[in-house]
Length: 284
Image 1: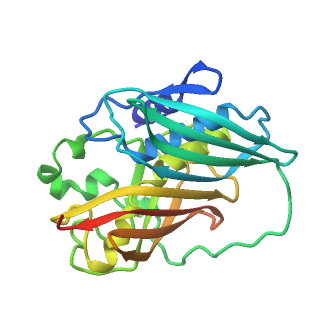
Image 2: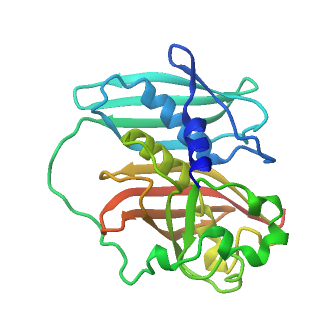
């Protein structure tokens, strides 16, 4: 499945059109709006392209989804070089379509440093990804229901620990776990691996916020959309190796849901923490 991954890498390879200004495109798919992970990943690429020191790696990002993206037109990414300090670099990116901001992102980069080391422990007893079905195999019983979304090429191999998102409906849960990896081989560039995981981090996390009600993303009358997204990059990783995305529903109220996710390497190393809030509106 290298071709879909290569297409994703090309999707993240923005076109420079002026100083601090880049242009991104969307895949040729029948989508009503641009996938949030795509905009976040492309915005991080734009920010990183303006960081002159290749030794400075992104350590955090904070983003807001402002308007639905139009998949039929390009997205402009305007970068503001807010600060270049001795240890940290800060960038702000605004994504624009039709003359309006659809997304903004702040990203911070740090020089390589050492210090004390502590982390949350990876959950024990999680099924190995090699023993779990891939997405198409898992969702095959719902092929007709899913339509062309079922056959869409997927650059990210996503494997649910436990039952599929549809059959578990009606059984409340406080969270979920998925294994994920880029489905193919990536270059060594650590920035690309961070951008790929940023893209993938928007998959399944918002769904976690409605699990306490026994709902799934296809529950009748449920409207969901990402509102904001934050990530902290703790330690090195490869996006084309298996990563466990351990997700927890924190709060759902007032038509908004908040979830957290810890991303671990298979050896138990915590590499990324994600927090996302999204719209979780019912019956309107």
